[in-house]
Every structure is written in C-alpha cells, then in structure tokens.
Amino acid sequence: MTLSARIALTRGTFSLDVEFTVPEGTVLALLGPNGSGKSTVLGSLAGLVPVTSADITLAGRTLAGERVDLAPHERGIGLLSQDALLFPHLSALDNVGFAPRAAGASRAKSREVAQTWLAEVDASAFARRRPGQLSGGQQQRVAIARALASAPSLLLLDEPFAALDVDAAPAIRGLLRRVLRGGPTTVLVTHDPLDALALADHVAVMSGGRIVERGPTRDVLAAPRTAFTARIAGLNLVAGVAEADGLRTKSGDLVSGLLSEDAVVGEAAVAVFEPSAVAVYPHDGEHRGSPRNTVEATVAALEPHGPVIRLRVTDGGWGDGLSADLTPAAVADLELEPGSPVTLSVKAATVAVHPAQS
Image 1 (spheres, one colour):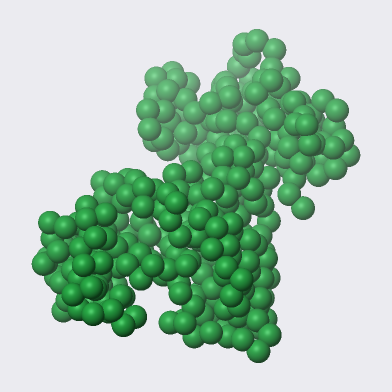
Image 2 (cartoon, one colour):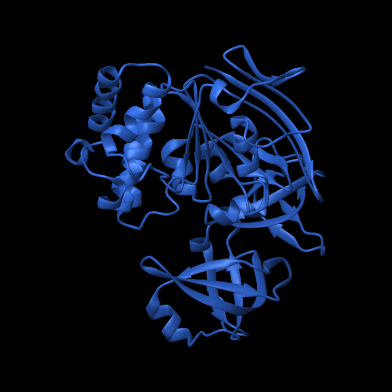
C-alpha cells in the first residue's frame, strides 16, 4: 500500500509543510530534533491532528484531501507509541484480539488472530497475563501484536523503543525488523540512528516543520548534509562552499578534502569526517606527519563512548564543535580536561565533501 502525503498546518508560531511518498511495504524513518514536527506528521496521518490542508492517499484511497477527512478509525492505520497503552483490565490475548473484534470478527476468530500474533512476537507464554503482570518489554511485544492484528494498511511507530530499558530495546528492535519484513507500509519516528539503520529503507530528516534531507538510510547517515544528521550519525560536519581541493568555510578557512561526484565547486557543501580521523595534540606541541587541516581549540567535554573517550571542543574557528575519539591512555598522557587548549589535525584523505541539502 503506497502512501502519498502532503501535509500543511499552522499552530501558533509553528508551521508544518511536508510532502513525501512511502512505497508499498517499505519503512520511512522520520528523524529530527525535538519540535521539528515528526510526531505532528504521524498525528496528521492518523487523523488525530487537525490540519490546514492535506492530500493523503493510501493505496489510491483518499484519507484526507478536498472535502475528505476520514475519521481515525476509518483510515485503516495502526499506531504504536513509546507507551504500550494496553487495556489494564484485559489479558494480553484479549488486548491483541480487541482490534479484530472491534472490526466485527467473532470472539473465537479474534482470539485465533490474537494467538497467531502473540506467537509471532514471542509472547504466547504470557497470553493470559494482564499488563500489570508484564515487564515493559513484554508489554511492548503485546502492543506490537495488537497494532498488527488489525491488518493495517499503514503502520505508524512513534518512538517505540524510547520507554524501554537498554536490555529490552535491542530485542524489540530485532523483533520489529523481522515482522516488518514484507509487512505493512510503515512510518517510524525516532531519534536513534540505530532504529533507522535496523528498520528503515529510507529516512527523511526534519527541521522547523520541513524535510531538509532525505534518501536511502545508509546513504544519508554515511554522508549527512545537515549538522543534526551528522551528530546522530556520530560524524563531524563543517559547512561552507565547495572548492576544487576541499571546502571554504564562512570564516574563509580552507578545509582540504576529497569532493564527492555530486559536489559542485562554488555551491553550498559540507565536509564530513569521523571522530576517529581527528588527531589531538597539546597546544603548541609537535605535530606528527603532515596533515593539511589543523585548528586550535579548547576541550569542552570528555565523554565515555564505548571503548574510547569522545572529546568535544569549542572556540576552534571551523573546528568549533568537532569531536575526536581517543583511548583512555591517550587522554591521561595528554592530561586533557575541560578547558585544556589543544590542536586538532585531520588528514585531507579522510575528509569527504558533499553538496549541502537545499
């Protein structure tokens, strides 16, 4: 069921104006900072948020448009949020069976459908338990089964892992990846790039009620065009204008790098490189090798990041806000702490210059 949507609305000082298509059976992830409009898009698709104008079609059927605004229960949409929102007085089996039962199926048929979906999400063992007897991860499994038991034409996922603990989230993510393979057309709202990488075929990055970046998931996260996308992908990004041998920043500095095939000299671009590509030296210390990109900065923060320490800097001209990954031993040897002056260097061969998203 292909989804085609154009949605516009204004609420106070916030305005939303987006247009996108989700091909049948695929997953689109909406990424963006808080307040960018991601959840508003889901609410508009579900018919829960009034819009100024819309043209929403699903498999050729108009859900919202000129003189058409179907009620939520008429849209054939399943919605799963970060809170399971199960009926507390019903068992897991009857929670899942509620959707087909509400659609007119007999009690026996509804329970048959519910049992099938509970088995699909590995939740058969607690079919007779009520939500209060289930862990957060178990509740979310039941909620997933309930959302899919209605055989929705479109599935909306609003931060489905946000309320789960670090042990439960990977299991539920893997579960959704399995059940969505060849499943309903899906729109996922998330702030976690792991969710997008695991579940989504395409991503759209939102900012200020607009889509500012979109494309296949791995392409967007590997070559981000916006600072937000670079940050969630764990990459450094410097904005400027493409030149033959790199990128010219707004301050006039040249960041040497390799232009991508679609970068155009003289047009807006971004230089992207990994934190592991950034070398850190004491201020006025000896630089090893001959990196073409160097900048002086001040350590702003030191944060554990898996097996390494991620250093973030400030006051560095074009290097302001950059990250570098160091071993704990290197941090100790350099005697680094917030406020320490440092010099960063980045080899040109590790810097990729891409066109900036218009």
